[in-house]
Length: 66
Image 1: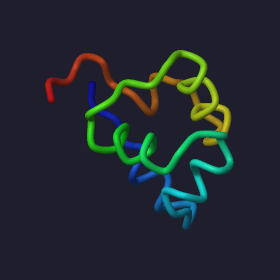
Image 2 (image 1 turned 30 degrees about the vertical axis):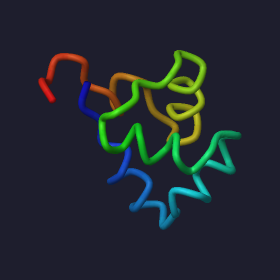
Image 3 (image 1 turned 180 degrees about the horizontal axis):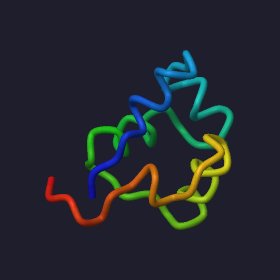
């Protein structure tokens, strides 16, 4: 599943660590999601969408191949 998390995070001027802290996860979790090595839990996907004030589908595209 592809995502645009890196672009959204960088647009806000946040480091992976800062975003992780805001969401209550580790920097490694954010890194793994950005590198398409980990699909977040539904709870984390909702936290990301809430943080970026958008819908989950705007961050994650399940139709794109890796």
